[in-house]
Amino acid sequence: MEQQNNTMIRIEALTKTYAVPGGTVDALKGIDLEIRQGEIFGIIGMSGAGKSTLIRCMNLLERPTSGTIQIDGQDVTGLSKKALRQMRHSVGMIFQQFNLLMQTTVEKNIAFPLEITGVDKAQCAKRVKELLEIVGLSDKADAYPAQLSGGQKQRVAIARALCMNPDIMLFDEPTSALDPEMVGEVLQVMKQLAAEGMTMVIVSHEIGFAREVADRAIFMDGGYIVEQGAPRDVIDHPKEQRAIDFFNKVL
Image (cartoon, rainbow, N blue to C red; front, side, top):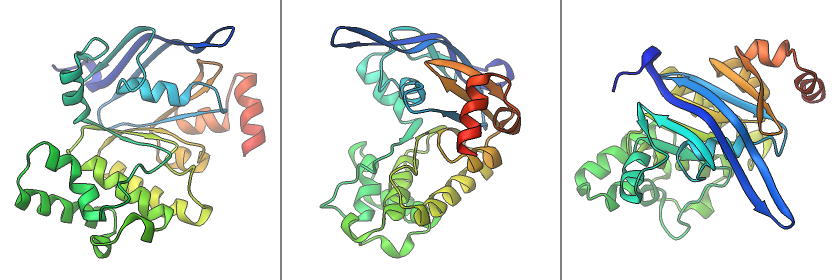
């Protein structure tokens, strides 16, 4: 379905409420958002602002309490489990933790999603080789995760997410579990994907990366979108006091 302005993700009136001892917590409070095809979209904010909840709602890892999410024109909030699994082929996700199969080689980790969908061995091998080149790990095909650095593990996770040729990649703090010297190698792979036109949504505390790479960004606080626009406007010239205070602390 062709979307006006090539909208890839459309979110309307999205809320998410969690039950907690003694009551409830509203993690998202009426979020409205559009992300266009080929756009690099940054999500910034304090811990507990709702950033991870928002990005996890985009592929229904978290079910919204109310509101709608459309992916490429399709309302995904009411999909069956089977249809949801199919939808996730087109929406790759990278987490803070790498979630690799520790007893399996790098090559097998990347090939796993292809194998379970019945892709033949020759095609699998060809695709894995391509992906290892993309993430700069051609020499690690036979290595095991325990033999890799944190940055290398995250690059394997990115390759695995790319194996299904997704239209959208979601990154939830992809460098937060890494030592500082390993952050750059993961950000470099993400820059490469951005240059190739991949639609990417990135929750990140790497403010400089968001400023440099993102086309648009939002600043979240308390479950709301407080600021949105070009990254340099949001980061360097925020209008709302909550955003001003945050960036004064982190910059």
